[in-house]
Length: 358
Ligand SMILES: *Cc1c(COP(=O)(O)O)cnc(C)c1O
Image: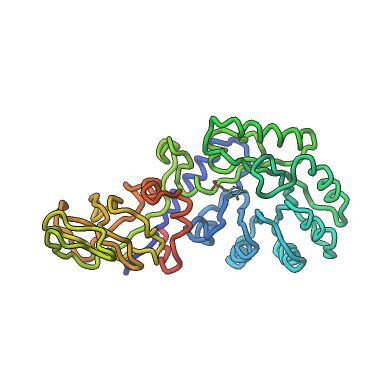
């Protein structure tokens, strides 16, 4: 029996999106970014749905451990690296590839007494000012890593673009130029682009691309839809009509009475609220699909419920399916109503929402 609310994951769409990414970055290896519970899609199911990825990337050690526990044997990159000797030991035990972006992490590697030889991704900060060695500090960091015993199995280099979602922004070219001049002729494998970078063509000459959002079928650009980009949405956040009620003209619905019935109205109460990850700030003109028809939210999002004005719809029944986002209602559109980005909505789908693979 299907649950009141569920995140339905289309694994075939994920594979199709991976193929679309590969077509955009021909010849590049693909590190499928599955951090943050695969952007709400389920860490393990997402990884298992992408057997063709060349590696998986996660932010935290615990995410990598969960993948190994599920039997994932492929390369796993820890995008933030490790922060303590025992974490480095765990990374060695599970064969994780580690990003090294801070002198402290080089110290940890220098003090490492095991025999494991890591793949070390040295991160260069070319303008993001978040993680990484500034180009001027990179040679020293590199020399220290090269002098290590045991030597790394392989040294690779990466950077991250700050404005890849704006393809015309000059800073993309500047960052790539800084990266190229820092690593120029060293011959290391390289990685530059997230989804926006690789879809815009920035940095696809590098050896690896690091898509997250694109794999989930979402556009990183304001001016292009997923469809324009040949991507298919992966998640449908689906819920159920709990009851349908008549609301006489002039009465209000929900907390603080922010929605007032402009006429005698029919309101469907739907099992989805901020406890499921729906932003509380969604305004009353936010669309949802009730039994396939567009209607709008009526009043405040509660913890477990929303109200939807279905006055103009064909008869709505208890048990009807409601799409909060998914086919026919892109998460990009809901994000605009919430004043945020699709990443935040997807990552925000809460633990009580079961994931169903389709
Ligand atoms: C999260 C992340 C990505 C993936 O970004 P998308 O915009 O989702 O494609 C790539 N690289 C790094 C370093 C990241 O932290």
